[in-house]
Length: 294
Image (cartoon, rainbow, N blue to C red; front, side, top):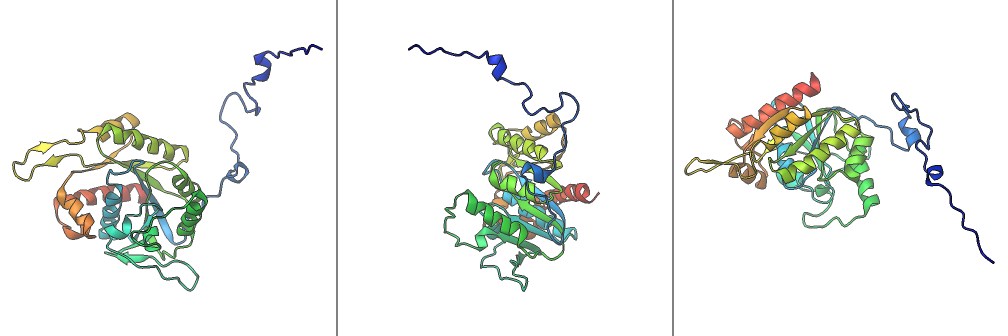
């Protein structure tokens, strides 16, 4: 017995508009809850939330984030910083803090403070040398707790130090919390800018205002002969800012003292508040504050 093959023209199987969406004009606005997305909520007691991202590891983002938070404190802003890097938290080292946070009477985590900045990090909850070998579900649960179960008190600005990449943590933060603005940190090197642009596009997709970019490790000046060398290339971030129509918020050089200050837990804005590097961080903070508060 022979079986007949039935051929269906490909055109009948393919459908240009399977969901029946309108072919012109704006797509219908489907509520977030109907799309299976959480409703964005403000963080209790926090006036403005600022995300600091790089989407690339090793470009000095956490150092920028901490010095920015400290510069905001110097401008009179009540400031906190939330370390959202579950696997590689840096904030405890940068702020010279350790120890497990206490619980408030409302069963909320109480932030640890130094130099006038309140902070919360996974680094306070696990040992300094203990690896966080968790799968995605555990990571998301921990992230949700740090977003929603910290008693910040009253803050003008909460800085979110985001981990590298554009994955689960970034999406969890941007979909659950009202974020008022984001800035991208990158070196001028093309290999770093590739990921920085991905981070930029992620914020655009989730409708978070992009305040601008910070160019880090822009130039190294020899302390002996004073010759300037662009180790990671020159003006790469400035070029991308012009290309994408966003502001270059500031330029931080590659200098040994910034690294040394970070390693000893006394960031540059604290260790040398009137120095040229601290003033550069202060200039970035002024621009960010102007954009956040108008």
